[in-house]
Length: 249
Image (cartoon, rainbow, N blue to C red; front, side, top):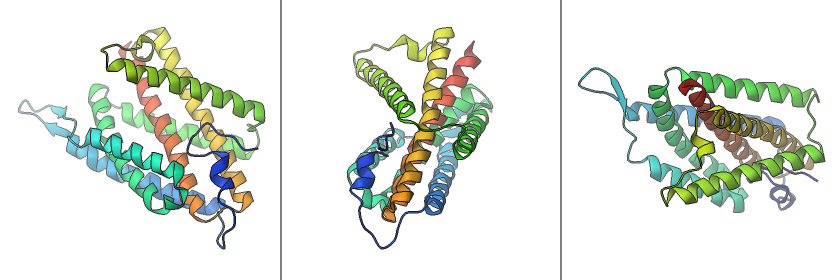
């Protein structure tokens, strides 16, 4: 049985996609993934340019655009819709990439102003981690066994609950110190979360490979590319958080 902690890539998504004339392929999924990632990068550059301005004192400053929070909401709603309507992926996956790019561009600009050079470091770490895990997976140095999958799923669910609790508590003026503190505990927490995010890539690789072997419909290439993008975005953001904590020490 396939298992992944990425909610966008679960067994049922491929099971409901039964018979189709055109089948999902690994090559097609890779191509779609590059398209979505390219969209995110291009829109992120635009978003960055809109967020950064030069003040009267000659120094750069970041003003989070008015569309930042609406973009987060739209990206979330699109992702939620795709969970139930996978056949809409050829149309909605690019929409998700556009709004995710708007969010990441402004967020990255803010981090870069606070910690110069951090965005380049986070991008390198994300790309390096992705490449290393892909090579390890293809060479079978890392195998997505059932125990491995169960462990990653459990850890991811635990992290999700912590972040959910943080979100709810924020409405009452409370925060979970472990998430935000820059001491050893805070850095270790971010490091663990980053590792878990990275391990989700292995589950995604395995899931996409098995989906192609099953001969799922062609639109699942877009859906699988969307699911992989979700993990990559999470990994990039966690690298930003981890690197920023090490800079504060």
